[in-house]
Amino acid sequence: MVGTGYDNYSRDLALRGVVAPAQEAPDPVPAIANPVMEGPIKAAICIPTYNQAEFIGEAIESVLNQTYRDYDLYVVNGGCTDNTDEVVSKYKGLFYIKLPYCSQNEKLNMVFKFTKAPVCVPLASDDYLHPDFLAKTIAGIRNGADFVYVNMKIVQTGKGGQTGLDRIKDLKEFQKWGGYNKLLSGNNCGLFWAYRKTCFDKVGGYSELLFADWDFILKIVDAGFKVMHIPEELGYYRRHAKAASSFCDWNKAIPYCEEVRERSRQRRANAKHIGSV
Image (cartoon, rainbow, N blue to C red; front, side, top):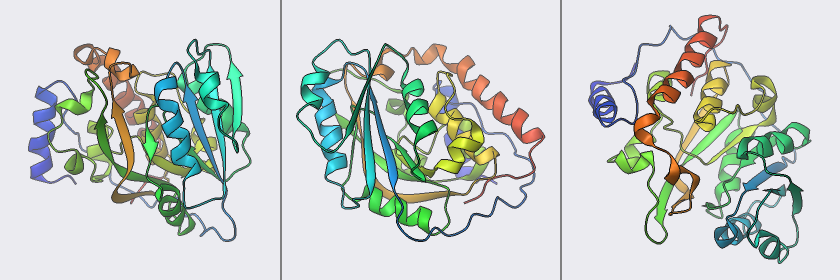
């Protein structure tokens, strides 16, 4: 159950048009039990991109500079019209896929559906990772977690770039795991995760909802997978004028938020397992 302090915080966010107040969840039942992973664990890292040539180099380099080296890196160009080709061509050690225009979620689904790697990691092309991101999230998965998320630091680049996070007073407090009630109020897991491919396969990948990342996390928890939080800033979220989130009218986003919540409530009404920390 979420404490009183968060209840007040949630109501404050609701009044600001970011999230809706949390509702009571059904009584939890045991989560799915996953075995500890042994031996090498390869990660499939997917960077979907559309016209982010200015920033994608830093995203790629942040992967190539990981202290954990067992990964495949996929950069998926979904119809870019800028000089993304030129930037990506400078790097070796990655798979570069060019497609006609498609959504970010379609690019992620394409890579993660067919990868043989047991761990999936999505990374926006205008964000970047701490060098220890993979080492620490893979360690969590090796020890039994299904979905591992980390704290993120907001990086301002240039002028402009407004997101729903701008309305959150304390990002670190918001990113503390508070169970289903808190997650139903908003995506407090941020945007930097690593998870078992079995999670992706079980929930059917990413939807085409406006808040597909939040919907994906809720599907993971609703399916009974185990979530782990690493309270370290291991991901860097870039805020800038060309970010996709900058073009979202957050005042009109509330109906889409409720659609995500309602889908979760419907799933949980018939669930046999509910995820846990």
